[in-house]
Length: 371
Image 1 (tube, rainbow, N blue to C red):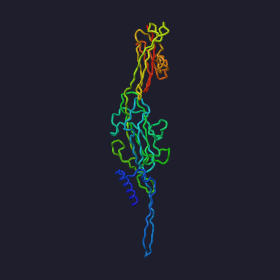
Image 2 (cartoon, rainbow, N blue to C red):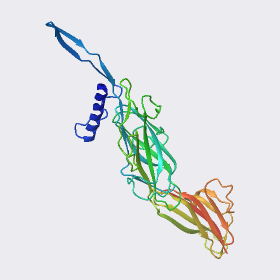
Image 3 (cartoon, one colour):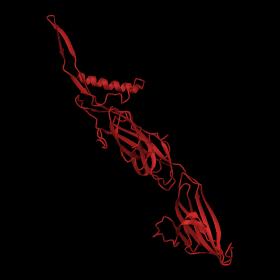
Image 4 (spheres, one colour):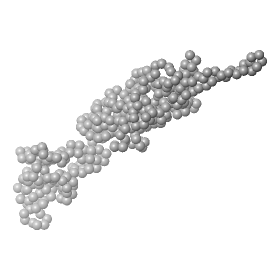
């Protein structure tokens, strides 16, 4: 009974000091490490018929239990990260801090969230795809694909923190606004490097000889409802569609290539061959223009030259390096990501050039003859 009361007073005192939050509060690293054995022996002095005597008590021993606690917060200068439609591997950043009196593993579980307990404002109207979670392995605070590959927090020391990244892909189209995500963190056993320990279970009965597990977290796990101490925590962030438009421009020009009469400086004579060039430029460096498609009506008094559509890198008279399209509207065999067709009924030239990245350019050319 006495030993149990001592243990209760110790735990209560630690909680009280931590709650006050004054300069006297101990950090997790300053707390006695879980598993530490504490022993003491009392001595007794007395006399018998004037002769001094001494004797010692038996030794009382107990081990310090594990006071499991931690924090998890969004750690990116606010809860929202700006993304673009179609963005791949978009990142939200969190920070997990171990305030347990011992080395600790943590299980990580990313999820989509409709409600974020008031921590994230805005309407959640879409979901990310391919949602994953990774730990910052080189402690540079930036997600490095192929480097940050661990999916759980491994052997985090008391008072130490580590960055955790939720990574996902943004849908490529739609009138989208915001996707809320959450990071759930659950305490797991530490002690073995490069191996995620088992999820911790609180100890129900007290034992002086073993390290009891005590959940000391006192929060609502970010869901707005007070819960029992459960060794779990949750933080929220969101992906917000930032750029709604880009500075996309299309410049069209006509160049007489030959007129059948002059070898130099050909003129726009009947029978002359004319090249139309459409130069597409995305001047916005931070966002792509996706699904770019151009339509151009072949003008009256001209005849489209079959098989003359080319798409590619601007240069030369229009396209310096690219592909010549078969212009038959059958794209089944196309593999280069760009297609084009000519509709003889409405005289429409259609060119699908796909995505034009931030700061990117693409050129489309086709030819006509003057009637």
